[in-house]
Length: 420
Image 1: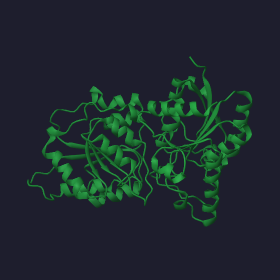
Image 2: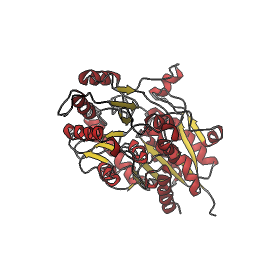
Image 3: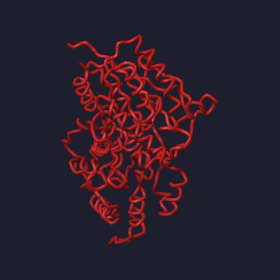
Image 4: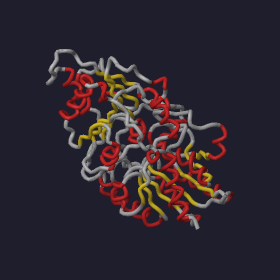
């Protein structure tokens, strides 16, 4: 058996922080050792944050996790006594003129100093930095200059959730951010993006998608979550943050039309429930629920650790997944892999030609809408209401390529190529 190699993984977002951004670095930390790569994580000390998941790490893990100080606002607020901030619904950050390239720039200095200490006392074979925040790649540039180690710059989003040209409020910030992007592209040994659209935007690199945790995926089929053969309600599940990038209004509009009667051939009030697990903007959600009169139909469970989230949605009959189009730029939220692992029918509202559309078409269980056609959503839900016996899971679906273990295997293959 080949001797283990050592990887330094620089990730601002890491457990016990929760929510979507921690899944990729956590999975690399957990599963790369299965391919003979020991991972040390360099992350930030405690910060103010909307959601936590204390179930992922145990005491033994901490010996391989280095937590550095930071001068960023989230860290400073924690030092001053704050412990938790309200979720903004995960909307793309409004980048302030005060920070560049992002509000985490105060982490760069302390993290690099911690990295230098690690590099002097440990024999690392490669470095991975993962963004957001883009400041993580500034640390990667410094480590590359200091050590010369092979460096992988990993992009979980374009820059934040959108390209540089759509993020910064000033032309000067855009100019410097574009320059920083080119510097990263020029000095990193490999560029990795979570979808093809990101790689196309960056102009080079390899796509290694996210994945759903295989252990968590088993909870979709837990015996404790089985529903009666003839459920009283058609239950539609929604997982993950709701915002303008991942809107829920098309589903609400369709269900409201059904509840109001629409084209229903019967006078009986349809029995529908919607269950959402994830963060959301409270005023926005209140406005939507009032607009469509769905307060008695929608259950909002808020953010839950991943295992609890899957268990809460496992009894649902259908799942709703959405990604808003932004010109030619397409995002691929990590939650789609949990959806695909569920083997449940999916109502997918996604951009035409996107990676999300391609995945859902290959999955082939549910309906795909590429133009926010509320009528198609409504017709599909009506069909399921009238034919509940036809609702079922995808039998024999190959989920391995949607798993975090598959993602780690792809990363190991990349590391094998760049480590001499």
